[in-house]
Length: 446
Image (tube, rainbow, N blue to C red; front, top):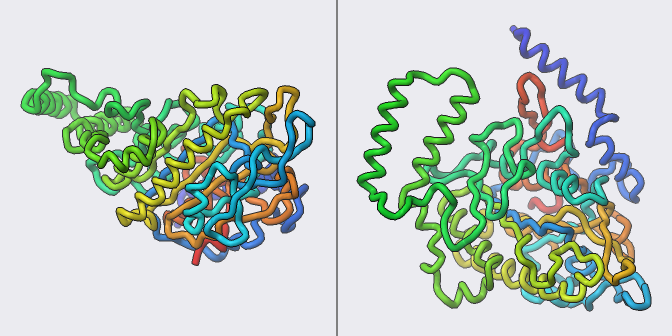
């Protein structure tokens, strides 16, 4: 018979569904309804609720382009514009790709050759437009910021659902600077990330200082085990969670896992193909998933070549092509490297950013922010790629067909990994849908 807790949980779930008009999901649907396309605002080929699908991918490498990658200047090129004449349009010419009829920016020549393994989802949208922090949160958690719930990030959700392939590695690694947006939220620290900010060394706190030999480390572990046994069983979920995290840290501090950070073991020719620090981050992500890490986020918000990064207001756009080329060489090499090592079909490569850029130029010749239509990218993962999905108008400003909300994009990633995108997780006694009612893009699944 159902107990009181289950009855309450069911009641809350029904109440949550009834209150959707006040939720972020409803706001997303309202925004979609303004776009041409299906009445429910879902991708036209979205899987219906009765057709749960499941892919065969095992890992995710998520590349984060902080600042706002302009879709019209990268993966959704349109006619040329002129910043001096204030003529809206693309900043660069377009080139053909390995997929007939699909073009990308001329500075993405490497990715263009790999486009049969790629789908540029050109119709992603959300209702957070002008503020970086809120939009970054939306693109990491799939939700708007809430005053009552700290939502988990995509990386933590994948870590929670799939775990690491091996207990000797963490499920989730962040190569970049940590913050709550990328964290586990209500899931707890067990589903948090291990992070590093440079590829020159391993994660802080896991590499033993000089003078601490393996024998000395082993003795320390024995003493700690004795202390923990004297303390008895841990009461309380928070303390138990903390103890589990400490135990995992001790496992990861050994030489076996730390070998993954020794990039100089790779051939010089491959290192040169990946390029500088961002390329090395992408190479490290390949080594991490090979070792069994489930989710790796690679941040590209470094000391940018163009002085402004992807947030190309004013003169920041002048040398944007150098930034695009840096991404192109790293991502194209990553795709080829994963294919060479037999990992491409097992690994979903994701490229996301907090919003796109409008076709108009600002007073300084750069571009503002646009969350109503922008591009995110999927590659590998055993998906049925088509080069590009969805259509925008002649200036990549409005969605013409197949809108994809952030929950739908998340659901596509979950489905590729065999995760039930219709399930709910529990924040205490409160059920929270794992991806805010999102539905996958059906055509990407054979």
